[in-house]
Length: 318
Ligand code: TXA
Ligand code: MG
Image (cartoon, rainbow, N blue to C red; front, top):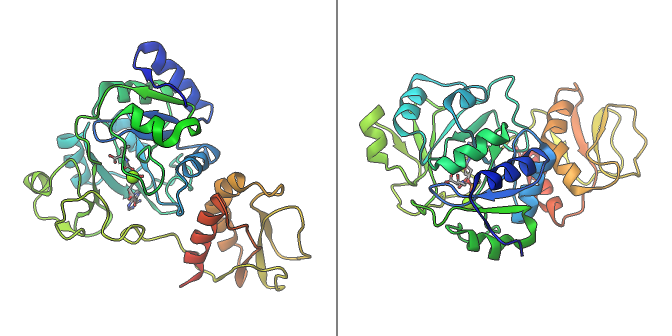
């Protein structure tokens, strides 16, 4: 089990180097410890889902050090500017439309056109983000289904060898996750209650909708359903061994069926992490191929394959 490393300038430099090299690093925020990886690197983001053992590819929160860095990723509205000015750095996550040239990989946002961003409060977290120089995707640093960690030793107990390094800056001050507010619709909507209260937000921007039914716990009412999932515009067929002539092929592994249409291979060697890293970009590319449907080859239903099949199934049920 990796020993947590106390925060220092050297420890931050080491952690930033690991992040830039595509490794997962657990780091403290004011809410809970996050399991961070370079959000622009789909392979590194796939490693987050693998380490957590998440059965679904939920979109992740993207962490940045400054509002200028956030503006490179998403389109700010007037409301977003107000909230950012008032609550950042802090426990408020804004869901905003992705910019066209947003460098965050599609896997980190689960293929959606929106992205969740926030600036964490602790200076150490922001120093790490600045040193890393890339936006960092970070869900809570616990195995899927377990409670969020608020100390470095919780992280070590839960994830152990699955993280390259655990930065220790003592217990988290807030202890519950950030409040998530969706600003992509006509009315700002709270998707998850958290460290910043609805009353506090209303004091700044006026009336908001609470999609969580004014609950005070930190879990979404219907996990995976509050945030809509990415769906292709053409139908998608799963477990296909023989694609039809009019179909585009989403392949997996070395043994490919005969096909004349466009084909993309999630992983020619059958590597599930590589497949996860390619999933959303390839779904989008084949969706625009002009074919009648996307035929998907069978993908093993274990490890990351389970999450891959879950997303494909959701995209196929229209
Ligand atoms: O306090 C926190 O927010 C912590 C620390 C590490 O920053 N992070 C955290 O991340 O709680 P996570 O991955 O456990 O929760 C992310 C939540 C998910 O429930 C997801 O549905 C929602 O954010 N989310 C992310 N992107 C979204 C989007 N584009 N639209 C709607 N919901 C989104
Ligand atoms: Mg979590």
